[in-house]
Length: 94
Image 1 (cartoon, rainbow, N blue to C red):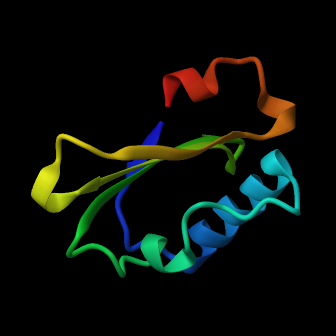
Image 2: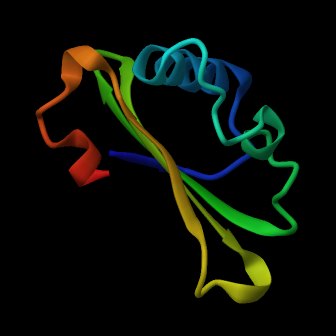
């Protein structure tokens, strides 16, 4: 498992959006805007990106967001696993 914080490089963001499109469908918009992953909310929110790579490709993600002034609350989103990697406990691990 890899844990990252924004700003993420553009190739990582593109790979995440590609995974999300594959996992959720092309008609579902991700909850996170690219700007969040580029670090535009870094002064306001603690964002952590959890990802799993297999053979160099991203196959699972989960993202947590917690406001800096009130870290006792937050959200988890973009929990996704590539269809070919499902039923292996990856989302549970993340």
